Length: 196
Image 1: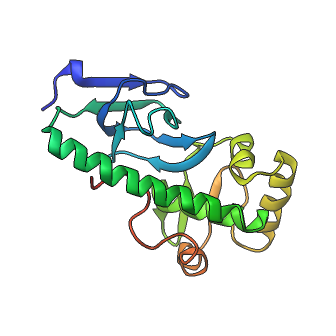
Image 2 (image 1 turned 135 degrees about the horizontal axis):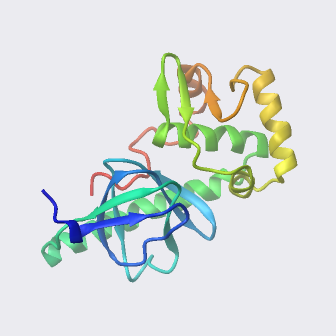
């Protein structure tokens, strides 16, 4: 198994500062650039924190208490290949973010909820529950709207039957979310760096 010195414990809002390959053993990490969400990583996902190229553009922030294990170093060729794959995936993710801002705010909210539901949602029955990893202020920043407008949109989504009432984010009828919003988010692997 892994030695204790290879483990990294992060508190909520801590950021990874040391380059390397990590596996998320517990919790949720947000990969962000310019304070915008790129993707979420959850238990079992692998993330690569680089000290160059994206190292200054990307940050990995703990959204809950997180336990990571650092993977052993690998051959330079394999590491270079993984970095190339990461760069391609990140470019694709950033293109999706640019496209994301070309749609109206209400649709951006649908797309953000669908992305988060797809990446870290917990399915129960027909519905998908999003863990409490974002504040309304963060969601407003990701969607580029005020917190007040976000609350109005949330109320509308509840009235339209897309969201469950109560605290948290319960996406009703997950299959309908897939059918309606699956085309907006690429149906290929999500932008989680899991297969590098």
